[in-house]
Length: 367
Image 1 (cartoon, rainbow, N blue to C red):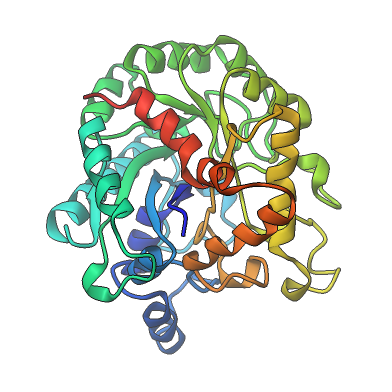
Image 2: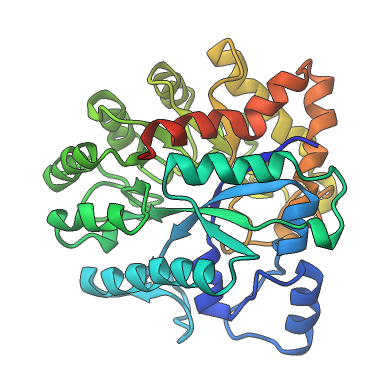
């Protein structure tokens, strides 16, 4: 099996919102939640430590994420939401501290990756793992903290402290905010957003364009001197029935590729076929569409060096909302034959599954 680096998972959000324990198997989680319903939880999990190991998913960008209160139709007391930037700052720091606590209290399950040395040692262990590991061979999941939406930053002078505590990637938007337009709330990069970019570049953060409105994303590509990704953003032109500003136009894809960026394709039904429910539901959506998204980006690039996987599993959606071949994170390996059918060889798939995001990460990590 090929090593996988998943560029987007909302682990802290799920743990603090719903009490999920990702050191357990996904099947234990589903069984428990079936008999103990959790308020506000509407989807079955796709994540668990044994499944990370069985799918050779060695590394993830683990997000810090809180939703603006206006976006929630029914405000549940256990959700990570905010009304003010100060509340967002508190929630995001709580989530970053959670990742540190997981690594300290459960080191056999979770490991923070903050430096090149951390990454090198972590990858060496995973590359030596048997292809069909027994529980005795299971290894810790590597987590690189990433901020989804910059609302948690209330003072730009705080950025070096975020970096010191392990944050390595920042996306300016989820919905629209003081920095730029976002999903369903369009708008350009603001003056404060431009100032944030300048400060981020001083500290060498990765910039994540996911959720940003297109004019803001294009300005970021033009002006941000550091590493740029779109951690979980499919190509809009391939998605039947799609009409919002969440996904990427071919223009943004081309410009991002020209900046040596990497795009994480999302195996989410709505990002593969917006009309998936009307067209027959989950059983009618295949990983073939994920492979076609990957291939489209590769065809634009002329190579396979600018695409990866950003699953967004358990990011407000779960088992009910992904292609029929997927039952857990372990099943991302099932992408391989679909890519092979489209002409991709073993080395290509190594780059797509992990190599491209590893290149970006290795560039910014300190020694």
